[in-house]
Structures are given as C-alpha cells and as structure tokens.
Length: 246
Ligand code: 6PG
Image (cartoon, rainbow, N blue to C red; front, top):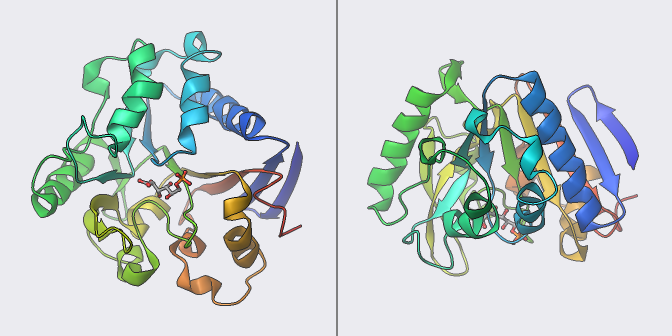
C-alpha cells in the first residue's frame, strides 16, 4: 500500500487491486468501529461498493458488532426497494441479508415515495438521528463513489448548486436517464467526521487525474468540492484508478 498525504485533511490510499482497496477501507471501517460505541455511515451506491459489501459480509462479518452500526444512504434512486436500480436492494443483496444487523439500524430512503417529500422526510430524520454541527447532521462516515462525469452521491455537474444547498437532502437528476434520486447535499457530506471515496478501475482514472492535478475544468466536477469542514478525507484507490495521475 502506498500512502500519499496531500494535506492534513486528505490522504490517498492506493492498492494493487479492487479487492485490496475494498479490504483497506474495511479495515479502516473496523478500526473506527472499535474506537466508537456507535457508528453512523452513509453508504454509496452503484457497483463499486459490491466488492466491499461482499467482503464485509464474509471475511469481516464476525469482526463487527452490527448492533452498533447504523446504515444510511448518501443517495438513493427514486424507485421501489425491490427495483434492481435500488441502492438499498444492492446493499441487501450484498451485505444486509448476510449479517446480523437489527432492522432498526437500517435507515433506507423510501425510494417508492414522492421524491420531494422523501427528501424532506429523510433530511428531517437525519437531523433527528444524528449529532449536529454548524446546524447540520454529522455522519461518522460518508462513503462516496465517483462517476465518469465527476459526480458524487447524486450531485451531478449540471446541478452544482446542490454542492452548496442549505438543505440536508434534495433531489438530484441523472442527466442521462432523467432518473430522480434523493441525495445528501454538499454541506452535509462535508460535515462528516470521515469521508472516504472508494474508486477503482480505469473508468475513473481521467477524472481522478483532473481532480488530483487540478487540470482542465476540474472545478466543474462535484467530486472536486468534497472538502471536509472539520473531518478527514480519504481516497481508497486501486492502481487502475490512479493510472493517469501519478
Ligand atoms: C449511485 C452512487 C453514485 C456512484 C457513482 C459511481 O447511486 O449511483 O451513489 O454516486 O457512486 O455513480 O458508480 P459505480 O460504482 O457504479 O462506478
């Protein structure tokens, strides 16, 4: 593992393979679990986390006291929980169905609800469930992915205002499909104690290069604006994801 610390708030942790990258995060997650009585984590969706969730559900399963872990989502597609597009369903399939976690610790976004109403409901739930700092809920951990267009959570480049929106949760729209998603806003993501990107594969390499080396119009990418206000940022990356940047 190579460690490059860009500044006191950001650290790049680079591994040879996607599996090793997932293991690196899992070990970090376990360390935080042992240091805290209760942990709230906002999970990312898409496909990258599947390797991590499968690892947590197998090799790391017995290491966790899942009764002390609370699962939330950083973003969720506005679809029913049975839909193959649902991040919740993906997490059930790869993690929740395999671990002994109380159902009361699983706080899904109700993707089947009216989007705007659910964004309000989930935001109010987060404000109620979590500690608060600067008037916003504080996650212990926010896990993020990065899209090929530089989006993160469900904040896309054409909706950059969501990176500074004062609300807790809002509706983002996938520019390709028009699919609506409930997403945390930038200030809530940046309010977390620990923010971890998990990015693997060649498909991420160009945007990661632009962001790390401040190239081209990198500021047009939401992922460029993830800067913890009082926490720490870690990038968990494999060699392919950094193949263009170091
Ligand atoms: C989502 C995610 C999204 C994802 C990126 C990367 O709901 O799709 O939260 O932000 O992390 O699009 O997706 P992949 O892991 O599939 O490349």
